Length: 317
Image (cartoon, rainbow, N blue to C red; front, top):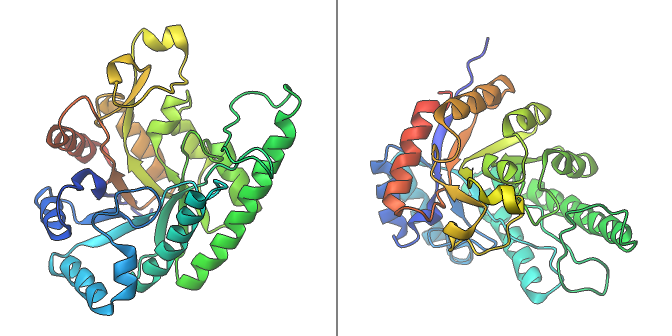
């Protein structure tokens, strides 16, 4: 039986206050050799200036050399955003995604991480509309949902072709609330309507926050799990029982929210994480587990340290 091996990586926006080389040294000191950097979309893009690297071959070569000199690699380039927003900002996001794919090709990076996006409800609307309840009523919901899927599928069919031309082999779409792909079912719907190069960036925190079980979901996603985020969430005791799990409050007021992103192990216990990675391994996943630290209940240093300790004890190495 072939051994499935996972390796720890980290999303570098958590170190956005550090320069590129300072960030690499910091990550290396943590015992991590792989980085996921934002190169498009709404991320900080502090460590990967896509426009600059595409315009200057010397800077691109130096960028690569800094990784090579440390024995490090790029796990994925992240370009998460909403390119389906009918606005100038949406157009800017779309361009940044296309540029990210070009950069990935020049860097030899075979995988990009993205989000599906969220269109408006019809051709004349300008406000993205996430439909979270039944399309049975009001009666305008069903045509809006059908229109949104039409727009989404057309975008990803075109973008997949562009990525192939650039040498990108996998597009890992994060199942994110507020986008068209927020669950295993919606992921499989998009994949089935577009291209097998589109799979999931399985972020268990989002599934848990919406009441799903990532361990069960992983089984249904066998063969299309392209990337995994090591990220935890906690449903806050008592609060969710009163108001349910949909939570529009700012993430900066964690004490008032029914759920919060937390360091790994501060939501689900380590036994849960061991089972999660064990099932991923059984489903054939051999890839990076990219730590995404967004815990606002503790310092960055504490959150990173806590998460790394938990992941090192649980991932299937």
